[in-house]
Length: 390
Image 1 (cartoon, rainbow, N blue to C red):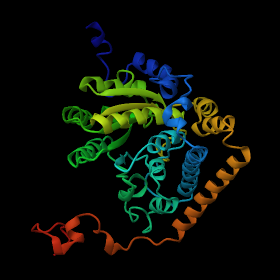
Image 2 (cartoon, rainbow, N blue to C red; image 1 turned 90 degrees about the horizontal axis):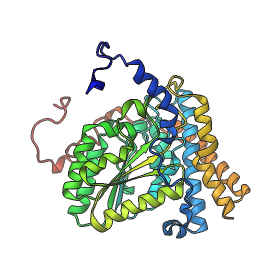
Image 3 (cartoon, rainbow, N blue to C red; image 1 turned 45 degrees about the vertical axis):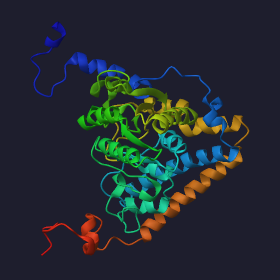
């Protein structure tokens, strides 16, 4: 127990030199290679789930990733121009996780995520116009301009947000899985979360119930190496993070997030488990973000430019998938350029749409908050729901 007594004279909030030096030394390794699975070098293109893809399917997956990146880049520009207020959490670098995961879902599979939600929204089929307009706070946005960057929703596409509370979506994803089982539907809920959310209490309460009640929920930890500006070595004990599922006898796996084929394989395995036996899973998909935690994050103090450039050079998911498709004879350089131009044009047009759209009417402030206020003829409760009402 001697180790517990080191640095006992530290002031509150002070970090011991030994811990600080260890974390600093490990930061680069943790950010890009933490919990790296042993599947490095495996060709996941030969997996049945990927062999079933047509050439058109593969090009569509590639185009989805390109569209997400160009949308994110255009939204960053809009933020810098002052068109977007509040937070803006960019998904650049993580595109293969959302696109690969969503690509294997069926009619009764649902998606819920945290505040870095633009990539998931576009992957489930939301269009750039409604997403960009929401970023601008405009009435034509997917949440009528009231949600902003962190609260995209599309119930018609089984997409349930977009949640700003760290880990707050984990019990909600559990609830969706409970509803599916209660309704006897063969489906699942993919609940995406960041590495920092794995330390939140609601996540463990959710794992407990998921195991106890055998619910078809798949928790996908998008481990991009940093919880805000804190490297994983500083914020989480134990490696890999997915191993925490062991305490609840839940199946878990770690995968590379820069390989779209690998993402599809591990997610397909987990979704099949949910469909066939109503069992939960925890997946840790090791990925990386090129930008700061949010646009407000200067990203100059906790990682080096060299670290970012090395990941871009060797593990960029879009470049890697494009190279694979070119080797497969599916995608030409001309076609790739055409896709890129189309995505840029679409993103630019969405910004123009958002600029031209009206802001919500102040009289609509209380709409879409409580069902009974929107449907007064069916209201059964008594009293005032809002203090402003007479």
